[in-house]
Each structure stands twice: as structure tokens, then as C-alpha cells.
Image (tube, rainbow, N blue to C red; front, side, top):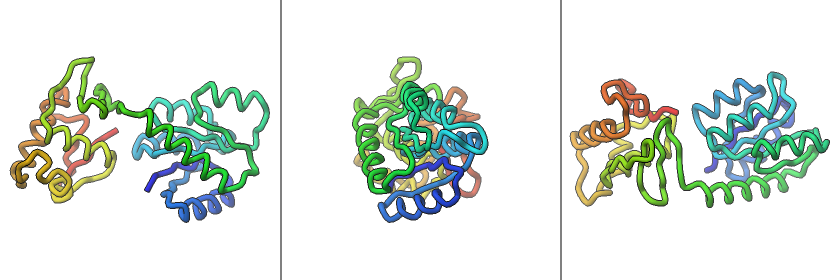
Length: 222
């Protein structure tokens, strides 16, 4: 289920869109202002952001700028159909632009089109100072290959696909079981997390990427 961030300060439109998009199998998180939108993107990194330009706090252009830095596709939803707003939004890297009032099914069509384009072109993921190339299956820091083993790479992908979420040891074991041709035991998981940290962390003793959440599991930051 794709995750959408709706940045809109009209409560009626927010309720209508959230309900309708849920029927189209989208998970929607909604916020009303620039600061909350930036925080939500940094924590959960949605698959796409629907952003109104005029917000009760800040503006949609600033939200779009941060979304582009995080690699989040953006569709502007706005009553501002003037040429300046359209050009400014597209020049900032917005993936599409739809003026209010709009037909909900047209919006869904635009969302799916942008998601398809984003999926076809996004073969690299940035994580702090790391670059993960999912086409080539390599992880780089400053252009240098960190040479992850198959299981270390699989483990990192599990974290990437659940960025910002706490993953229990049982969940991690379920995801990586037998991916390298061997049974993965609980103690083995500890070893692989240690090895992964030694390769991707600048200071493995104080990890910036893979955090231990005491009593619960692990979480990939950023």
C-alpha cells in the first residue's frame, strides 16, 4: 500500500480526499503546515506528497524543496492556477500540478502515473553519506564500494523498506531467513547487524543510521 502525505489546510477537503484515497488502497497522512510536512517527510518518507501551495503556516514551495532533497515525488494541489505558480512549482521539481476543483479519479490517475515514473527512475537511495544503488546491488560512501555480503545487503534493504519504523528481531529474522542459503539464528542476526554497522557507520559504537531501541528492536533513522 503506497503511503501519501497530504499537505492541505482545508479540513473538509482533507477528510474527503483521505476517505476517497483509502478506497483506492492508499494510506494517507495529513498535515496542515510547512513545518509539520517537513517533519513528517523526514520521519516516514512517504511515497508521494500532495501539497497545497497556500498553507496556514509556511507555503507549499518550501515543502516541495525539502521533498526533492528527500527524493519524494510531489503533486501540487492548489487553487492558484496562475501561470507564475505553475511555472514556479514545476521549476522547483514538482512532478505534476492539478488545480482545484478537480475530479478525485483524475487525481488518482495522476498519482499513479507519478508513482510509476518515480519507480522506474529511482534506482538509487541516499542515506546520509551513503548511496545505495539497488540496480547494481552496491553501497557506496564517497564513491567507494563498502562491499556488503549478500545477507548484509539484504538486511540493509529490509531496514530501507521500513525506514523510521521499529523492527523487532523476530521481524528481521523472518525477512532475511535463508536469503544467503543458510539458516539465520537469533545470535547470527546480532553478528550481522554488528558487521553491517561496522561497514556503513562512521562510528559503529555510536551508530547514526541503525539505532537500537532497547527492548523493542532496531530502527533505521532518516
